[in-house]
Image (tube, rainbow over all chains, first blue to last red; front, side):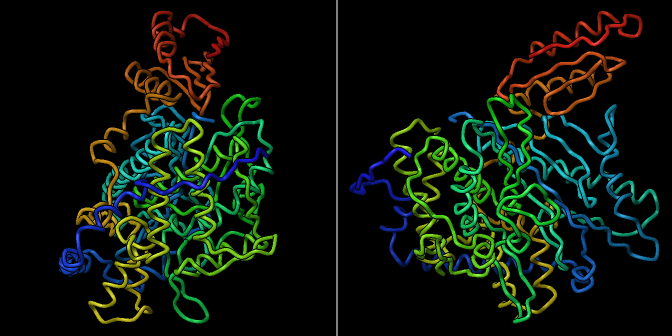
Length: 69
Length: 468
């Protein structure tokens, strides 16, 4: 195995993609976005109930597959 | 290898739920799925215009194998195109079932488990250098594959003796070996099946069968691009640390059970690392590697996302609730449980777990989340739609896909596998393409023209073989 020296790099600007945006934006924005997301989730759950398999218990019990690979 | 061929095979779960006395055996439902596709090829095994293969696999599962792709992005797009192709076929099959006057519903799931302990797989294939010793490669790769579920897992609600438990991975509970030759019993992390569908002297196939089927484009891309960069590092002998786990098979289950991703695992050398820490070590090596070696932009993008995801997992996995399948699904379950004030034992919880993977865009919960902007996308619907009929332009799949279109237009009889095309009325003209990087469709077009001119019914071209 070739010896790859571990160069300690001073970590400049190559941090992860979205982390930069989070830093300066401030907590308020995040909290507001959080509330919006919660509302969206509520609406979403209503929609989930519309298409959720009606007889969940029966369906799950009957969902038996033959083993594949 | 800087240029690599990739492929993913996905086995789907399928069930017909009758409404009334009359039912339909699953074998018949699958036949209806295939009916629209059957042309001149063998029944229940068809190559498609996009170069992919669709067939019935062990245990009566419809299975879709992507065409040969030359990049992780293409691979995710073609894997998703498979979902859409299957959805189209499902609509067609449902019509047929109605015509048979059987009332009920057909459901198809892109997941890996039922609720009584059966599993069906999602297999990744990577073309690797024959020069690299397989067991060396496997040993280097296994600690990575065991721990990557923290960002590649699809999540699963398990009923255990201690109660309900939410696990990171669907597949982890069904893995019993490190390396083996079988796929149905004693499933392993890496399977030794070595069918490169290419020059065997140069290449071998790495067949990874430990992964979950992914719904999220982000998760799928991360799973495939990180594995590709680790492989490239192994091929270049760049990995200089040993993470051999003392009990890799036990570790895979332990990690799946630990949604903090921080519980320590013992290495063979006695040291202890958490799954995040092991992944971090691989990721740090990859960051150094991409500075020193030529690496594709996509793999660089993969490394960037990898680091970001590990940072989030370290801080709080919930930060990934739009990116990583197991976290997206858990958020949905938690919100549902909270809103309806029900317990984790409620059958609806198991149903949501399942329906997250439903491939019908109007019923599948993953797609619903995606439409609501709660699951991050990397690709557009247009890209996926195109991939349903157009093969990748930079691999052998292009020759196959173009050939299929041409042969169908001209009513030429043919038979295919990954590296052979047989055509003519007696299937006596054979084109061999052993190079998966070959894209020259001229040869195939020319051949089809020749056949049209000669009229094989009268001229007996005995075993014309064209080596590509």
